[in-house]
Length: 367
Image (cartoon, rainbow, N blue to C red; front, side, top):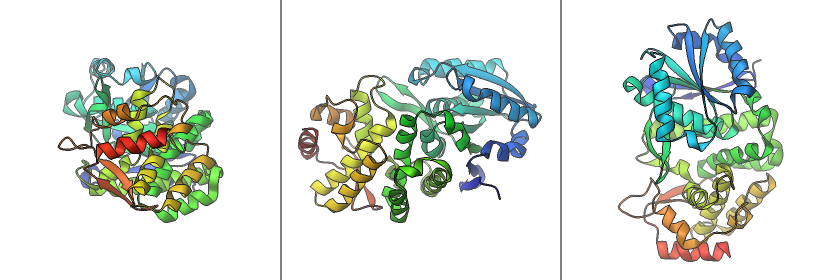
């Protein structure tokens, strides 16, 4: 029996599958030729990922009768910029890409976001396929169609909703992932459970750190992707409940903006942000303290930050963090929107946060 799980993302004519598990690349081989009518596959990766995984994908494509034409970008967030977008679009146009062709994104969230945005705007839209190589990308950024680049004003402030045609989340690709990155990616898995799937949290909590390896990890990825797929199918353009998927992220983006470059990972900031969202909900009398305690204990058990003080960077200023939170894309009418919790699996959206109370809460939490 195949160990590869198929998770459908139901979006009508734009529906697609997410293949999850060890061997997902091989399982996708028969599907690939239909996306490349010119028998060539333009592939975007970066100079860090290419030595690790490019040869494996070239071999897979060759077996499917496809020649690979790689574009290798610089690694890291610098590529996720207007300059990087221009470089990539130019490279696609130099290859005379046609609207009937797809582009493959092989890499983490940066490559996936950048390639997806380039695919959305090149010749007014070409298809793309995601092959995410980090746990964070497999469980989050590769699914749902959010693409974009960073601007001086913040992360992902320029972008488009552009759904992939296929996502291949092969867990074998995670073998080269440093343990810190694996743990950081797990934050997005537990986030899904905390938003709206208490039984899933119970399973994750029972597994503890063992959930980060092998078949339990593949199952957890598939569960989190299925949860996200349901929300995306209901609210593709994030006008309503899709904002729930940002649990912990408003705090996290503020941490990332204030921290020195590379001091903290996105998933680490999300974990601390999730813990703060639960603890702030407790402070407002909306969530049992015991649930916040359980969340913090679980994050700590898998090696993730469980509060702001446990992040690698510790020099935070409450007022500056809240000022960063004012710039969040979810905000409306000048008010900060937060995803809060009435308990484990019971997240909700509050579009009008009292900033004075929030600053006071953070001052206490940071001290």
